Length: 224
Image 1 (spheres, rainbow, N blue to C red):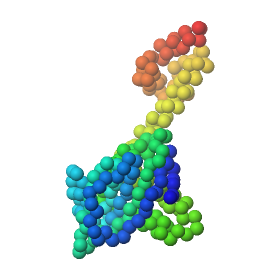
Image 2 (cartoon, one colour; image 1 turned 180 degrees about the vertical axis):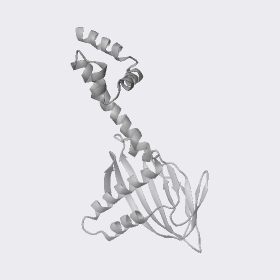
Image 3 (spheres, rainbow, N blue to C red; image 1 turned 120 degrees about the vertical axis):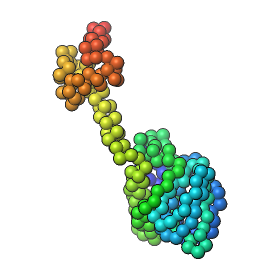
Image 4 (cartoon, rainbow, N blue to C red; image 1 turned 90 degrees about the vertical axis):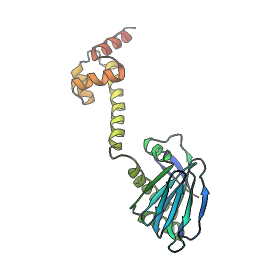
C-alpha cells in the first residue's frame, strides 16, 4: 500500500487500475473516507447516480466519495477506457481548508479533463521501477492539487491568505497593546500595515471596541 500526506491529511492509495470496461458495474457506494477518482480516456458509457445520468466520453472526470450510490453501464460497441485511483483518508483530524474541501466533495463531475497525469500514475504503478512508490505518491499529490483547483473558486487562495494575514495581525495587535504603554493609533496601523481607518474597522469588527476603548481596557488590566 502506498501512503501520502496532502494538506495535512494522510491518504492510503488502496488501488490503481484501468483499461476497457466491457461489463456493467452494479449500483454501489463507497465507505466512509473512501474516494475514487475516475478518468475516462476513451470509448463511451453511462454513469448513473441517484439524481442524474451522465453520458461518459473521453476527457470526462468524476469523483465518487462516501455514500454516493452510482453505477456504470457499459457500451458494448465502444467500451469505456479509464484510469481509476482509490484513496482512503486515514487521518483527517488536522485537515486544513484545502483538504477539507476535497473530503467534503462526495461527488464531482467535469468534462474536458487532461488525463495525462492519471495515465502516468498508472504507468508508474504497473511498471514498479525503483522507488516507484515515491513517484506514485508525488504524482498523486500534484493530481489532487490540480483537482482541488477545479473544485474551488478562483479567489479561494486569496480568502485563505486574507484569513491567515488577519490571524497574524491579531497577534501583533495583542502584543502592541501589551508591551507598548504609549501606543498610538498611527503606530498600531503601521505595525499591521493598514491605514488608521482600516485599523479602527478591524478593531471594531473583531473586538467590538475602538482603538481608544481597547487601549483603555488594556491600561486597566495593566494597572491591576
